Image 1 (cartoon, rainbow, N blue to C red):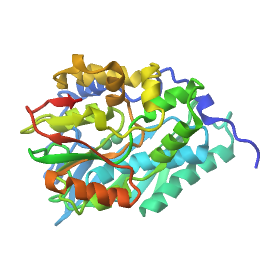
Image 2: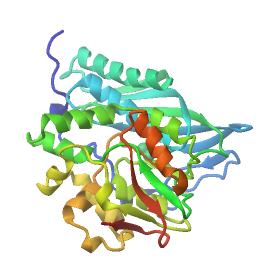
Image 3: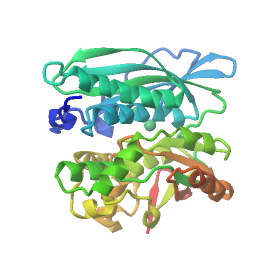
Length: 346
Ligand code: CO
Ligand code: CO
């Protein structure tokens, strides 16, 4: 097989292809309305990971879509990460992914058929592992490659995990280490260690399937997945509009190798600043937090872990079960404190 061009060389990293900050899309959607369809259970209003639509008694569709430009050079790995990331929002709602459609943007004139095929192979590899059927998709010519999937799953709507159902007395479990954004910036700057890159890529390519299956035995009361807004951003969404807030144990966060070092060196993605702008006000003692820790807390994650709240009495058992199954999980906080607040406990 001939040498394939490095995918990230096609990416400008000028901000094109980056996720819009949390404020902008909210403003654009503000005031837009649609009929209150009787079977529409969760739509774009609110901060859920996916939409929910009743399909029959005890059955709802969970629907989500995600796509982005390459964050790794290997096209197979990029496909795998993209599909793992898209599937994750279904797992975050306690759903079982069943079908997917591919969204492909591709510069056919500068990247060859082999790269495209490898991207699609990587995506399919993750979908097959998920037991999720690829039904089709749509592709367009674009200067910068992008790949993603619209994923549909099934869930019992009465048992779906929501992210706005926090209550006191819960322990907070995160199922992947933090720092994919920091490692990615260090990698682009040419100063990431091989160990850091390897660990970040392995973590991003991993499905949240097993973590979700295990957590389903431990009375999950609220759940989301940690992606573009970072741990603190997604935690702030969980704590918003519910009866209590969250405490995050700042000294006990599971980190990818190198992540703390790169944060200390200021190798921070642009998205971190946008995340802080949107959500820093949810952190009551933000000014007392070391800047490196803030940059970890708001580091945008690609294909990050599930952030699940389970009864505190079950949290350690859940953690042992997850770790026993090879899931790199940690207990990162607990529910409590004033509603809307994410207190970082050092
Ligand atoms: Co999500
Ligand atoms: Co998403």
